[in-house]
Length: 477
Image 1 (spheres, helix red, strand yellow):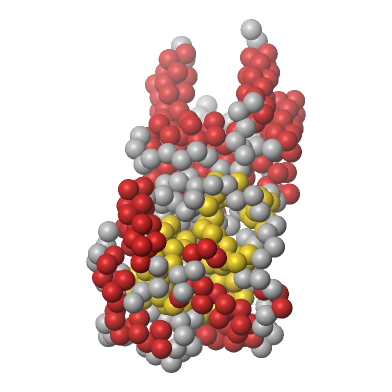
Image 2 (image 1 turned 135 degrees about the vertical axis):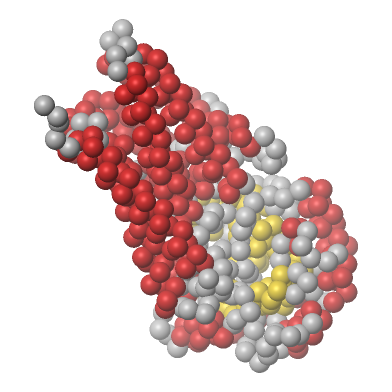
């Protein structure tokens, strides 16, 4: 069978495979209540048109970003790309009858390019806000709220206040608390700017702070009348309550704090029952113990988005029942939210999880890549399938002419590497100058700038050197 015929056969099989998974074995993307494990029918998924148009490029990246244990699964997925390249290289070398030594050296020289491309993909997925799926709130009386989010005025934040507001607006929120570490004065200024009409009132900006005592705590509804420095957990909680705020214990289940009974005795208003900052799920036995404890003691259970400007795209929402929300003024809106948290009114709270794959434990993640690929295709709707079919057919019948025009012969790998290196260098420069602008607050700007800059530069120089020796160096007579 000719090579072109084999390619057409593979494309046909892939199209049939996608259609089969997306129809017969379809998995409906939905929002699930983390406390009841039931689908919430009042909330739909909105897919951006750009996502659909470029589905074969953007879709898999976003699906990897939404992995339940993304910081473990993403590197393992990229490792499989390296393994597949190594296997393909061995097969190509085995088929080579002449100049086998040169073939081996060529494949070895390509290995740093592959590793560089994989690292650039890793950075792209975690640090660039792609047009992700979001939520459509069709309910009558619920509003969507974040209680845990950071800006660049937090030591681990990587987004401006303005961009955090835009991010929450894009993801369908009605209100959110900024909970920078050990700092809420900057948030007060930003919230005041909104009250003064310098930017729209939706989503509503509310002031909080993440306090690092014996456990991290979200202090919600602050008004600038106290400083947590040097205070005990008890003094901090009492002070927040004195001025009408609420205190939520953050990601207690990570095992770094004291026993949960201590925080109930100190007067905390509730616990994060889920936190999307790292892993979307933690040990389910611990989950049940914390849930039972909160129910027994009348403590509020909410979801902590823990957004820092990078990492997993939005996958967790707090839906609060607040009738006539739009008719309330800003002060009344915040007070209604705080009242729910302080009174343990769990019947007025739904913790919504974006559900686009079956649950799985943290074990055997090395082989999870293959089921992730299958599950991704299972979630596609009709228009996403059409996008895949269109691009597959386009590259099958017009791929070679396009490649001849845009990419010099056999230079594709080098050009992709150069693009990845330039991307990392540009990002490093942006982070450097942004870090200088907020010096004394965020530390991660400089950390990531110092990481991405040298890696991007080395990769750029290596790719340029390889391009010279392969394509531009004068051939010896």
